[in-house]
Amino acid sequence: MTTMTVQIRRKGVITLPIKLRRQYGLDEGGVFTLTDLGDGSLLLIPGVSQVARLGDRVARLMKEADVDVEMVLEALDEEREAYYREHYAQAEPLHRQ
Image 1 (tube, one colour):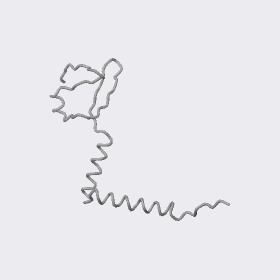
Image 2 (cartoon, rainbow, N blue to C red):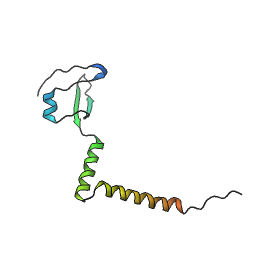
Image 3 (cartoon, rainbow, N blue to C red):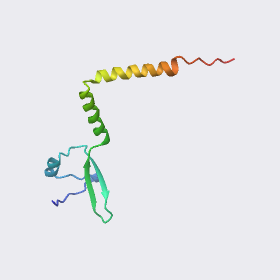
Image 4 (tube, rainbow, N blue to C red):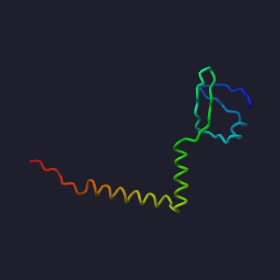
């Protein structure tokens, strides 16, 4: 276990030492979970954001299925059109008397 001193700067910014950032592959914009252990100790755990994790999963599944972004966009357009036709296009207009 390594102990290092860091300083809280303006707006609560803490700079992590470069050695740790390189060792753990931490980059700007990285997401962390901060846990207050209740005795003044804080536990900072790096984590992948849910959006990044799901984006990586979608990209992997698309690659496995040999699907590109254009194909996905085209399929979404087709589904949107079908949904519109099913829910709105055949509705009778309301007549006021």
